[in-house]
Image (cartoon, rainbow, N blue to C red; front, top):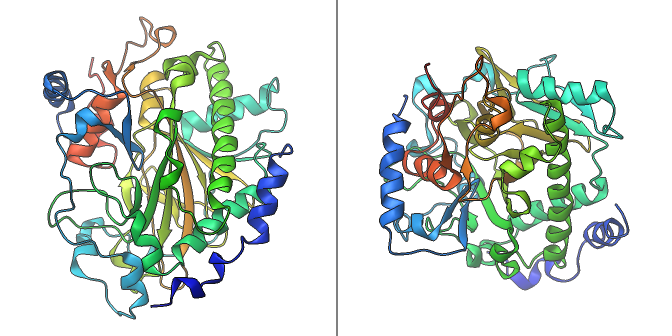
Length: 422
């Protein structure tokens, strides 16, 4: 093991990080959900523990009432996927091997040349530009995914954030282990999401932290290395959350709503925002596993900063999986389940997954822009008509994510099982 003091990162901050922060501050199987929902509400109302603070889990942000249902430690010893990858193994352990019917397959373990890419939207001056706003709406309706350029987040800050996180994952294990997380909060350095003993795992490590609401933000739990990294994380978070609010306004207008309507449906200024940084080490058998298994995101919006050099995100398009080819300095934005609910199914969350490869590691930053945890989420009244009845029941985000947390993400079955058959 390399002594921590010998690591270059501990001496001085990389110039990219210091410069980026300075410049940006100057202006740059269908589960039966409807039955299960009653059980969740009963458990929540009978809980003796109530708190105003939430504990957030990589896109599934649990509060302390829900935590009483969770284990305080992982069911099995944690093995870092990075450690496995760097050990020189030629085959992956059995617990990472997906059933044959669920594997990505060798034929799509690498990007498909010439594959159709998701829509690209130029946000420069998009406000008031009917054509560009219409393109956002079409992407939300038809794809559930799109890339945005000229979005207002400093490109230098984006690159510095991605590189800073890459350097964090390259630190010696003794520098990362103090941030190790537990299934109670998921906050910190982790290597699995589910608590089911013997579960088949994904080939990835991650770091999870929360940014909003401010009462949940604990910068002492953010990585202290590389130097000045906490400052960079804060500035990056601020700009990405501002971008999320801007996109929400465009989406509202495209639905024929007041521009702040979707934001109000999410709780106004009391929204939640949390970051999951994904680290996908090299994998000797990429055709047998996933970096992240197929799922739709449970929250509102996801703003993803991808690894520009190594594609890996795949989006379901009918019966096919399309490998997204990242555009330099662009964000990939996708619709989450909560946005599908409030838009009454007009905007759709889409199943996606992450493949790994044997030649290169990947790093990506996923920011989850979520509703306030205890606000009732339902189709907004303006989008419910005689011709289009409300497709989804009213529930809080807490109730929905506890269901996901209990059962685990299963493609889009958790969303489809909610939809009214009337």
